[in-house]
Length: 559
Image 1 (cartoon, rainbow, N blue to C red):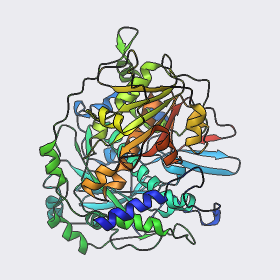
Image 2 (cartoon, one colour):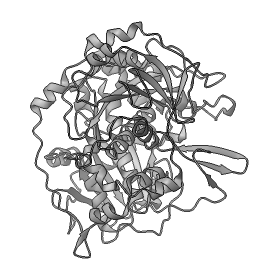
Image 3 (cartoon, helix red, strand yellow):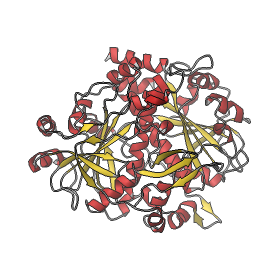
Image 4 (cartoon, one colour):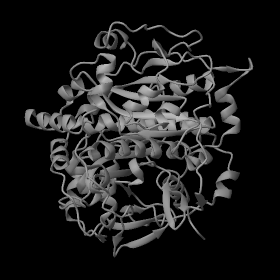
């Protein structure tokens, strides 16, 4: 374990940006070798899925966005072609095409750094009414919104595989193709691809919630076992898929009582006949040895943490009072009535530029922060460990809140520890009117627009946003406790937080944008963080977007 820890710490330090130099990356964008963002398995049987037009989605008022946070109150949908189609359409499909001049490019429901999309999606399921007669493993093609049938297996194997899970469970797996991101971002791509896995986990969880389903990360699975189940074991070369994680999807009223699929069930997959050949993504490649070392260092072995966590888990009671609007309805009440979930999901976009004169209502700001808390929040249900991440907030323009630096602590009882780890000069004052149960404190009253932009690689959106969140994660502690495999998981948590903020921004008439490019240690130094107890892993801006000029929007899928 020591060698792997040293390797991932070496990667983490080497992939930091600082004021004197950026992390190693390409000197220019070699457009002729830009990877294809869509992977298809040539030679597979294609299973068509149902599609929805923008007009059809706009016409759906149920379920409401707020109902995604209590999916157990919805009737669980049956496992059918229509509902599997909807799950994938609302989580990983193309959401629109953009066109400017002679250039046309797709946007997807799940966001990705630089719109490069290293994440591949797999469905592992028993028979599905109207879609699959036999238990199967399928690769999802977002370009076609279809499933590519990679392998079928026996009913006996499916029964063994799903025996520890609620009736109606199926599985969704993720892999990463790091070349897609390293082409543009170089060494830092390993970080960004794992942010994207977090966004994908949350995108799946939101879509599942709308169907009355929940998701659970099978955190005790080994990397090799996941690769075996997805049919990507033993792959080599720069375009190989590396296994990320596997999630169970099941009726929200049930309890997932296992963190892994039995080893006895996985052995049968080693002898399956896998169909299809992955299409080539680039004519040539640039090798990033540092990424390969990080991948190798974070490979996970099978564990039994799930049962241990279940036994040790004693969640602290957290009371979150609703925020009143006009003395009667809460913002949540209004969003329950006025904001359909599917519309919010498909309208999500990353803001390119933001309006530096727009302000956010304080009530909306507080409700966003409350939605980032993991306690009794099904969007964070997939996370088996933690929470590890806190939000350091540069508040620029929120009505009735002083501009300045704030902290939102997402883990009960963490205040004194975090307070002791940063400079002692901060105020630690709770703003008047702050909701009960929200550990939110003013650290410094100051106009810091230009400073947060500078820290975010001089990106003006960080300054022009109503607020920019820096995700400060526990770092050394989780690595020492769990081992190097937890490193990607820390970025997954940040990605899940980012996806919550994306949809919260949409629900409140704003836009969000993930910011992976930032100066790591200069931020640590600015707040007095020393050593590796905490690390800054992701930035996220929320504000009012400026209209894109000269860009037109086209439908996601033509008839």
